[in-house]
Picture (cartoon, rainbow, N blue to C red):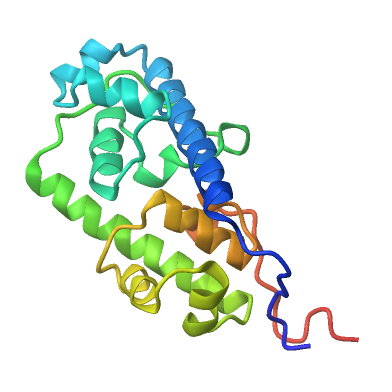
Length: 196
């Protein structure tokens, strides 16, 4: 056996849509939770440059966060972008009131570049951990090879539907693609570990 996971069933478009919606709802609930921890209202968010409609749509799972939007929310909420994706039951994060800032264009641009690099590195390391080549991941996930290369090189955003497909093919939950390695519960096996 090559160490590569074997799959009998690929996600249907309907299943991808269902999982993408569920993922957006979980992220939205996390955003709401963080905002409420800070005792901020949607009007408070608007004073920091994120309009009420966007807050409502994200929190209700009707708008998937792009990297830039995640960075904007993270700046206002005083957290790191990946913390918007971390399940609350695994996070010890407790933001403190008064940490909010108005996102500047340069802060959003710089933060977006860093977050895309983090996501790309994470996808690459999880893929490699499973022994899956970019070509095999493309086939397993039903995503173009150029998309995988762009994500891993931080040349493009990771769309939620793509995250769902990649996570399924790699064998992790979608939020795992956004977390830094040190924040993940996934442990890489040391060379020779598990060999008898």
